[in-house]
Length: 574
Image (cartoon, rainbow, N blue to C red; front, side, top):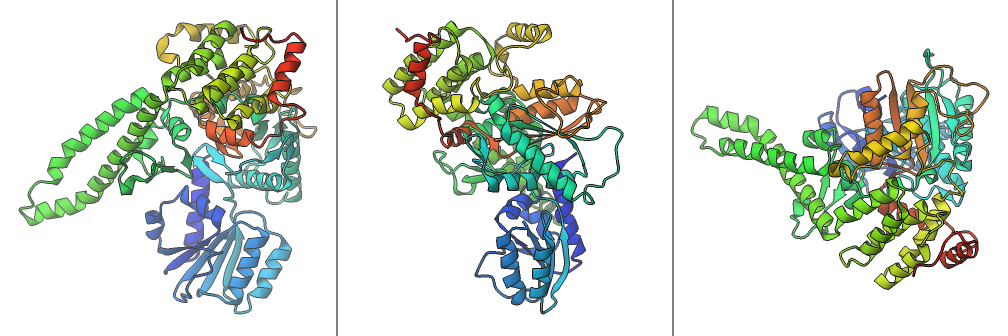
């Protein structure tokens, strides 16, 4: 189950089916992102695709010597654009591929518009999602729900993306969903409806153990997206932001023009592929080794070219040398900027307290440490808010809850109201009233022992104590112990055997920390293959922007604090 390979195969097949000759690839905004995640421009150029155009671009020239490969989402807008295109074709012949199921009426409209008979082929190729890593996919959707209910357009797009993923992996799964989440149940029903309606498409060879689709809700674990990260891919996304494998470095002090935007793709960058799941300390050491290797090779490339053989060797090795030079400068720049931001924002200290809030249950210590950091001028309003949000989630119903005092500390620090409002928003979104699980307490003696041993491992693990709640859910699922009462099956059938192929989808977005969890489970659990997807891939900034959209029902934060004080659940800070 490799989502990068699945999408790449579709793109390769489109190009191969169009035969030899010069081609243009016509896409829309979304399919441009889908293709760019699995193929570089230079790779596609080698397959005689010399032009990349958007179907909605009005300024395209007529080029009758080119064949057109159209890869489009089957939206009303795209069908209308394609109808206009076929009435006045700019290219000699058209191979049309839709990224999902297209209605018969739309196909009929296209056929009627094709008066010049330029369309050679119309097919459905189900690459309707963003393949992030081989085991991770995203739909690049933000704000999919309004309160506790789906935005209907986003529900439709999510169901389409998820069914396309299943079709591309050739899976017809049994479906389980998180009972405490109405959006999870609704999505499960929508996916089931599509599978039932398009039963011929899902008629794959039966496996002994059917695949399983597990639909979860981000609100069940609002902690994970709020934590600083210390593995390479997750840290880059947290501090710099990864957008379709691209990183914007334009704000880095003294950045050179050619490094203002860089691409980090494990498919085309060996250093990144080997280091994306390693922690920051190891990355620093590996960058040093990369630099030294580069320096060793450099003099050989710059030696005098005294013979034809020297020149030939230089020409043969130069592309590899140039690629290595680009890799070195890119990663040195990225790691340097991560290091600068971590130091400037005091992130080691901030992260240590975050981990304490997420993993430990010592309220007094946590409260003191949060207050101490709120007094520290190096701690930004962004990080200060994050700490109070984590405190509010963990100690929401603690008898000594001191949230009003921390809110006063935030205000005294000069934290804007926009940020302060997020504290009540995160409790409304992922507080105890909403969660279907007990996020902070180990469930059994084994889990308690594990947590105790984790505390004994020493200071080198202090920044990576946290294990996403997804780990426990998948661990229970793999062992056949995930409770039907909390995660029911849709329909009467249930799995008798332990699942082998698992697709887990998180409404509200997955994180790179969870991607690492799934990567490790795939590596260490023989016979089990897991793919993780989400409406988006989160970092704290993205989670906060989404929380800014969450309506806080019936109360503002002061009312929340006053209500809890009146009920005796919290007391004001002295």
